[in-house]
Amino acid sequence: MITNNFFGRKRPEPTRPVPPGQYLEDGFPVLSAGPTPKVDTATWDFSIEIGGAEIGTWSWDQLNALPQTDIHTDIHCVTKWSKQDTDWRGVTIDALLEDAGVEPPTGFVMAGCDGGYTTNVPAADVLDGKALLAHTYDNEPLAPEHGGPVRLFIPHLYLWKSAKWIRSLTFMDQDVPGFWERYGYHMYGDPWREQRYSND
Amino acid sequence: MNIDPVREWQIATVTSVNDESPRVKLFKLDLANETKFRAGQYFDIRLTAPDGYQAQRSYSVTSSPEDSNSIELAIELIADGEVSAYFHEIVKPDDQIELRGPIGGHFTLSPNFTKPVLLVAGGSGIAPIISMLRHRRSSTRIAPTVLMFSVRTEADALFAQELEDMAQENPNLHIIIALTRSESETPDSKQRETRRIDRSMIDSAITKLAEQPARAYVCGGTDFVESIGNHLLDIGLAYHDIRTERFGP
Image (cartoon, rainbow over all chains, first blue to last red):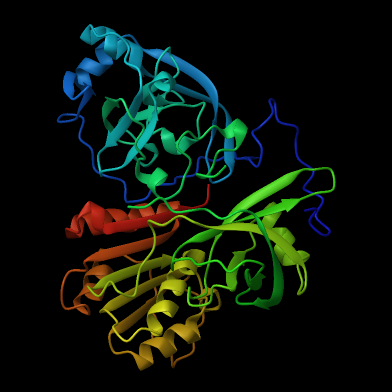
């Protein structure tokens, strides 16, 4: 439906296209279902479980000792804002699996977080350098309200998949809905196909 | 938990436009399809220009879910806001607007939840919370409830008269309105706090509940929600009992 008398704002041309229904945001909005949990890197750890067995646990120091990867990319939030040219640093899931001496799993993965948040994605979407455990944004330690000390970062999907305050990845055979997915958000969440909600 | 269906896009018809404050207008929309929602949920609005350009934004419903044929939205005029400016400057009764919903589901409160509740709103963050209170107003069982509402000036206190009427008729509902601009003028008849919501104001608000709130809902700008969320964690509310919604860059 063409909206009566709506012509859109004269907008600066983005350096790259933004996904459908998104607008460019200069700030960095915060969307979280709860308060920002207090996370202490002295006691923080991160674990990976595959097929019901824990295959590795990493402390903050151990995470930082692994090979670090930089990603320069655009990010897209399902609440309609996108932000271009953001810089992230962290550890790929591939590096963690290699550290544990484990072959890349197939199937699906559930992210678990401080505060109880969860989100699900296909395993392939966190492998081959597509995802980080990110601890640095714009050359600064990731701020708590943005998921620091460490968040999952999967920039090719809507940002609710990039779970804040990440503590675990659980690989599994079946796809199971996480926190927002149970409220009707899309199981996959590709911004370019505008997969915001379950029936998109 | 079941997966909530999200409805298809539908065309709604604007039935009224009213100024609620200098920066917020209320829009009543008749829905083409009966649409059940829960108090606290929101709808996506989609505007489409003749060249195909589309702008989408989410707005919380302010009306009670008892009416599933129409909704009310409170839209604040945002500096440089594309969709809010369209609503404030162009939209008039009988206009048609494309929308879909309801969306969300975590930041919702049922009248059947009868344990003590703390509601904290900053500015237009009152929108989903007034829907909750309107829904509860019609319920026979009303839990002990405190609303803390932070606004810049008296004129920015959306729904103030209605909130005070609710508190008048229901001894279980306490309302605290905090004005953050000290120079703001308030009629002598109104009791207002005149500072930002801080730890001591929350402590004294909670005493009106007689016990620790079983759940807290906090909606407002990012800094506001971060601050209140930290206070509530410090007070000892469990993380899972604090539900938040943030807006703004």
